[in-house]
Image 1: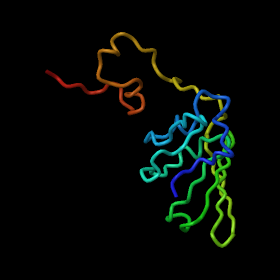
Image 2: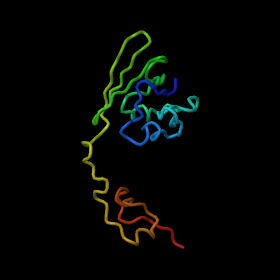
Image 3: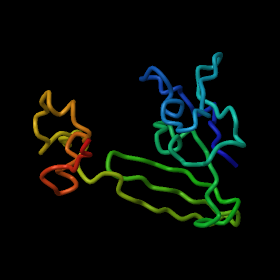
Image 4: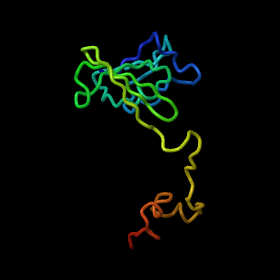
Length: 148
């Protein structure tokens, strides 16, 4: 079963402009239902089951089956997320339940410095072929360029 938004649980991400499932879906399959203002999967057969919407939903309103390579077909998955981890509840067809918790962050929320160690860009950087910080992350002083 591809992702399915339970309309009884979904609150349309009431504190935001658009439901998070609509915002995060990499294939634009989750769309906004015009009457209910809730997200729904418009083409379930095209869903790649990437679980992005499942992990983003603050109300835990999206249901999904597990992949057969880590849980048997017919198992039910439900994520519960916090700022530091995600717990997956797995309910099997025979009624057994297991929980798995994984960290989702390596730093506390709001503590990252995305441009730390990046040099201040200058006008000459716009003319070059490199990306911001590329030479730093590749461990070289200068990137090679094509000679004309």
